[in-house]
Length: 260
Image 1: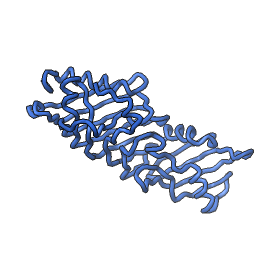
Image 2: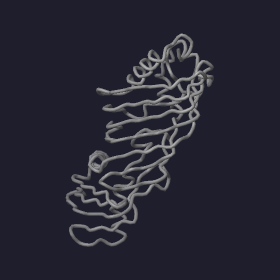
Image 3: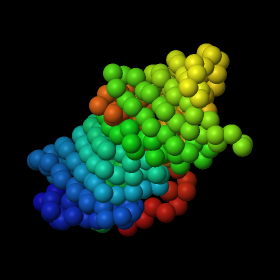
């Protein structure tokens, strides 16, 4: 038994079904737990959420601070693969978050995990260059063609953009930075415009025309779940490490939450 008369298998299946209801597409979802004798007292040592092949219009997990914190989840592991978040294809996202709390009565009586508090942990996210290209094309309609190369911690962008009646071809070479932890910006740019070297001011203006390349909250609806700490560009992939947590549910999400 896990909690009261709820078996481990019943609980895991119910939790996976619950999460799948907020995901779109042919989502593959699996929830596994590692109970021990402390579980009887309302402590769950570990829970892992694995999901892939889904799309979502923002973060699919939130806490509900108004609920009871009577249940303890010592370690929450999240492993997501090949999913779409508001038009951005993400290859991999992993997080380990300790010190979470949940409503024990809901778990016992309705087989539902509703987190009421999140600790802070660490995570990594991996995005391919080609997926970042497609996202930029959707975000900035003036950009008509783009190719990104991510190598040796540098980003090179070759693009074409429509500026009124003018088609501009340009290239930018620079670094990717996240000074605020929430956005990715192309900085220290060196550029060419229509095959000729651009001035420093023109290079900065070109970089700003696609900056921020990505904003985690505004573009992806992460509500402060992630604060980027390091960025690595290599093998045509962006790999970021981050501080992670499950944020409190915004009002519009809370209005749709079914507690039982």
